[in-house]
Length: 114
Length: 115
Image (cartoon, rainbow over all chains, first blue to last red; front, side):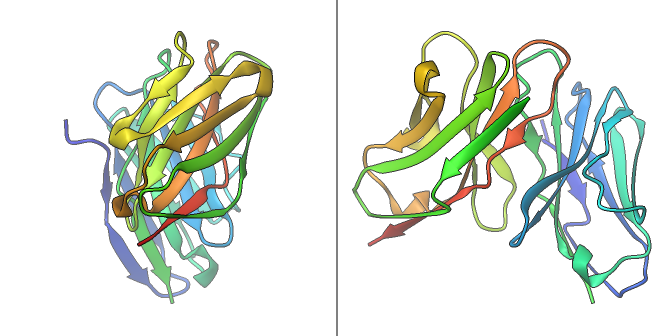
């Protein structure tokens, strides 16, 4: 199994630009999570999906952030427009509902907004 | 509702010494408990987990943790630290049963190993 796949691994962009982060969960997993990690705020849950449906987006910082899961094997996190304070490492994780809720993390996308 | 408290944001031990990372949790339902490790520039990976049964759980790389319901604790230990153990460690809790799939993570403890 390839594990959770995230792309790109690194993204450098300028303030005001649109950024799209991508995630492919482990096959058969039906829950998907987006996290943000910074030195100041630590690990934050942004949003999670069960069976492609958003369940809790209370962690999404503001309207500039949006996430979609069009099917069971793909999700995107979009920031539009991006700001320097969005610079962070963004992780995607997946799990299988009904089990012990163990989450499997991807390698992360390091985003730098200049 | 669940919550996790990790005592000590930074712990430093000598190589070969005992490692003890403290975690206390709060849960309104029987918990699933986890320890994750994050090496520099990597994602989080599972170190060990408690779901049911034996309260002493063994994980990878010689780590173990004991679920103590009376103390609401799930401390992580390793008898002898190795330089390669330097990383950030996260304790986490989830609710058993229901449709809850979210995990609540602690704020993390950075472990440093002195030669």
